[in-house]
Image (cartoon, rainbow, N blue to C red; front, side, top):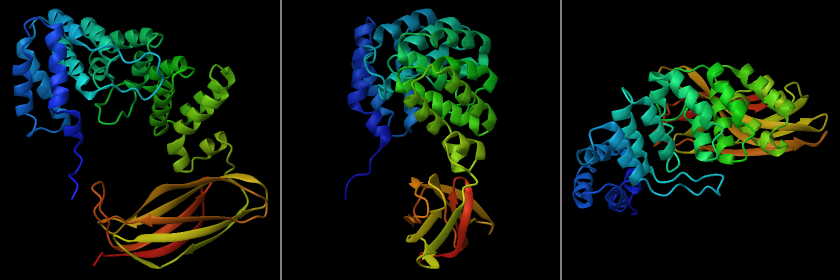
Length: 375
C-alpha cells in the first residue's frame, strides 16, 4: 500500500530545514546551522503544519538578536533571492520562508510597527505575508492601511497581491481582520487593472468574500470597472465570473444578469433519477433534458437536500454545466454524484432526500430519493 501523503512532512523536512539553516548561516555571522537543524527536526513529529512554523521561530530565536531592529536586519540578511519578477502567476515560493512573518508579529507587533512592516515588505517577495499582515491591520489599522496604499503601487506584483490578499474578509486559515469593505474596496479599485493574474485572482477572491455579505457592493464595483475600461475585457470577464461564483451558485438574480444569464428564461425540463434509493458509499445517477424556446446561455447546477443529524434537510448546491441551448433543441445533461461514506469534512445520514435541477439560478424540476445506510 502506498504511503499516505503528508503535507506537513512535504513542506517541513530535513531538506527544507537545512535550506533555511544554510540561509541564516550565510546571512548571520556565527549562526550554528547544524544545531538549529537538529533541534528543529527533533520537534517536528509532535507538531502539525502551522505549529511547525512557530517551532522553527522558537529554534531561531536563541541565535538572533533580542533587539528587534537588529533581529529584523538579521532576518533580512538571511532571506533568499526574490521570487522571479518576470513571472505573473502561481509563484508561491516555499512555505519555509513564512518564518520571518512569525518573527515579525512575535517581536515587532507591539512596539515596532514601522520596522516590522518593512520586514514584511521584504519577506513577501519570497513568500506571501498574507497571514502576518493581519495582526498589524488589527493593532495598527491606520498605519498599516497607509502602508498598503503605497504597496498597491509597488513594482513587485507579490507586494501588490499582498494588499488584496492580506485584507480579504474571509482569507482561509487566517485570523479575522476588523476592516469594512469601504476600507478595502479602494485598494481593489487600484488593483483590478493589474497585469498579473496572481493579483487579479486575489482581487476576484476578495470580491467573492465580500459578496457573501454585500452582493450589491460587488455588482456595482464590477459595473464601475467595466465602465472604466482599465482592464482588458477578457481578463475582466474572467474576474467577474470568479468573483460572482458564490452568488451564481446560490442563484442570485443580479449575478446571473451580470454574466448574461436570464433568470426568467422559458425552459421545460424532464428530470430522471435512475434509482429511488441509494446507499451511502454508492452514487446517485440522474439526467435531464432541458429545452428552451429561444437560444439561451444556461448555467446548470443541481441542489441536494440531504437529511441532517436531527432529521431536518439542508440544501447544498453543486456545479453541473454552463452551456448554450438552441431554440427547441433538447439539451441533455448527466451526472453521477458519489455519496462518500468516509469523507472527513461532513457526515452523511440516512433518510429522505431531494434533488433539484437549477437553471440560471431557478429550481426548474425536482425528484425525491432515499439515502440508505451503507450496510
